[in-house]
Length: 289
Length: 247
Image 1 (cartoon, each protein chain N blue to C red):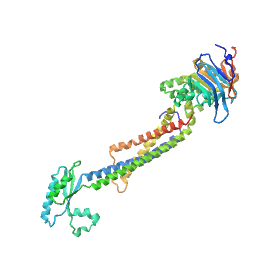
Image 2: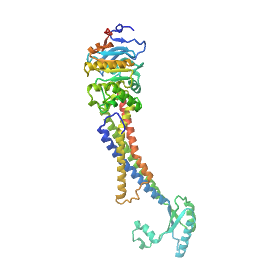
Image 3: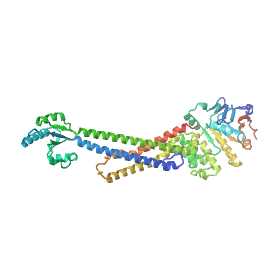
Image 4: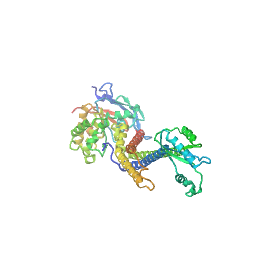
């Protein structure tokens, strides 16, 4: 236990660790939730970025044989493009399955003309010139176009930004609430230790020494509360990951590096509380003789 | 050395034994609490380094208030106080704290920290000054043994008698080897024999070079020791008594 000149009191012994622990618990949940969401969005983004779809409108009055020749030509163009991992011509059943959310399961019986669709998977990180590829595809199949899922990528990026802002705002609010509460507890401690402060001053203590005593006084209880709060947040996050309905554990997982970052929450909160204690004490002492 | 009686005058006093150097200089010091009456009125005096003075007067005369100005707990409403060559009106908070380390104070109510042991109470001034822990422990134990509390190092103040608490307070006041030692009614809680022993302790510290000022209303005790007196009546420095004739 760190040595200090202040007597034990209920504020530092119970309220401070309880408050810091609760705030760290909330901050831990916000942080872990944000990191898990970031991973999920990154996986979605990656899967969208490593695939595109080629749409081939049917030729006018085209025979089945001519259509197959055109499709094979398109597949050959795609396969010859550097960075392409695979290209699959979707069957009619697969196309109707994709459309069923909009047209219903009975739409297949309507005999509607559908364009051919080629699902293309790319090598991760490959930079394919889609404009040039479109030109080559149109030479092989007039009217061919590429959907690179840009609309979805934009939506996911927007969602990620919104999640970032929400998490940051939440952390700032929790931090501000924690700091305000620590200020309140410190002022109460200053009031209850007024006689000790006066004696320390009269025997030559600088304000910095007295502020240091309050910091030491609060450090261990604050750290204990912060560690307990972060452990509780980690346990709650794991429980949600495993048992929350509709969520698979793999969807909300953290990397070891992210867990390491999460572990910094307790010392970070303790440092914030300690700095707040010091600032509050120094400000209060300046008002004394 | 000239007889101190020659310097006795109404309202001011200068102990000039040590030439022009002065540890303490009060010039027309006026002190009041808020809008209340004047506690000290135009008080002027100076103290030479290494001197020993009694500050005498009835209860409520202003002795404790004068001491509070001396240990920098109060600043005068007007007039000038110079300690160790510095006008205290111009001291910053940090400078005030540093100057307080040169002043040892034995408070009338001791002001020990009840949750700290005797040894930790005495060690406080050294800890504040940043003395290494090993040196601090050694000096503190030696000093407590010197004042007869070697068997009570780890005792909490509440478990000590009034006299023992007083010795802890004295040890705390002198552990930092202050240039100026102030004691407010130090004999108020001890019997006559204890009071005499206490005065011998202060004299010993004075012989080691510490300037000593003892506030007391115990005129009988003061008469037994041949030291200079500052007499306060109703907030005014009335007279300085001459040294009593040697026995």
